[in-house]
Length: 460
Image (cartoon, rainbow, N blue to C red; front, side, top):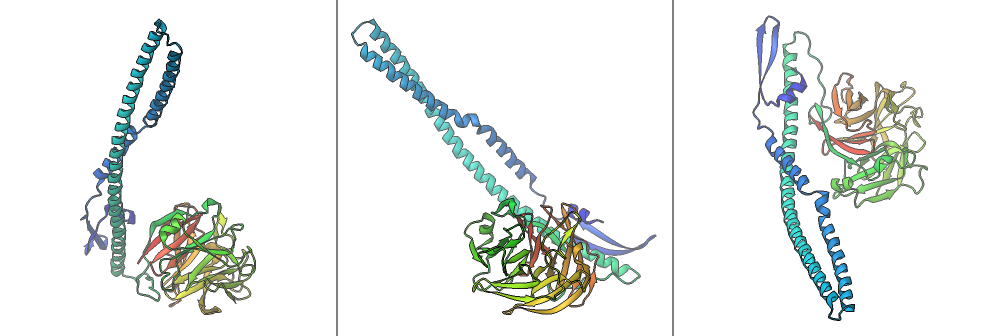
């Protein structure tokens, strides 16, 4: 039974049994649907109403009043001209009588135009009121359908993952050989990372598509009162360098691009201790990133606007020596990656002494920062597109195609277990993911993908 079949069936009652057959022991997953169907009829009603609105409100109708007003203005000017002529001819002869008749006819035509204009205006007022009511009703219905759909899909994705995991456990129990290794939960109690949802947030930044490299997210350890703030850094110089951090008060304001606060590291870009590359994280009101043109970690305090640094080993790759990428492209100046999890800040990099393979170092967030415990892996950094940490476990991704990024690798810093056989897919809406970091507060992956800011939910 494939995962796609599980999602298609949308089933949520699970019964496992073990049976003896000609093929030996089997795991049987008996599935029954117990959920209300999606209310397609309500969606069809909205489509029908929208079609009627489109037919009733046309460009010809919208300009009809303008045509009537212009015609009325023309007739009034013509009437004024005829009245002036009559005044000049007012000698009681036949011509004056004819002119009076002409004016009488024009007044009747003007009255007809006024009546038609009044009727058209009244009709359009009624149509406007009716359209507004229908639009409000459609908006309310779509909101209900969106909530229904989002709630149902998210709940079912989690439950289907439980079904799949339990089925795998059943198969492992029936296997006569040693069971396959299972993932460690790392340092925290969230459980195992089972899947990543489709995009939850998806928005183009206010900078547009001109700047495709950047980073965003939330402070993983915020000060009181800053829990809802979001930060954004766009590499505005050559898609490589940055010199300021933009902060927003909420998710809605960063999506709309309103009310930002900018904090500058330096007025020049680039220069000593400014940002190099798109990988960075915010922790305890400080931004951690690769210092410009050196193999050091910079810590920029947003309150004091002071920069502290700590050097990595002298053979650490920087300036595009060990960048992320795939066969189609290289993500420039991504030699150092930064990550946050439940325990703090990490820097992920590669050294020549480790043959270009990934090294993980804990960054102690003192002032100045200190490089703490370090772990050596066998993962070659140039084969990776991104890394992130969850509960002390490093996960690495690789490019599959324009629509899929795959989490294929994991390293547990607690057990030092290393695996290359993960198959967790991330559905993309843009081709390249230039930045990815996990927020332990909301269990979301914050992604910067070809100028778009995106979030994905991690399911445990």
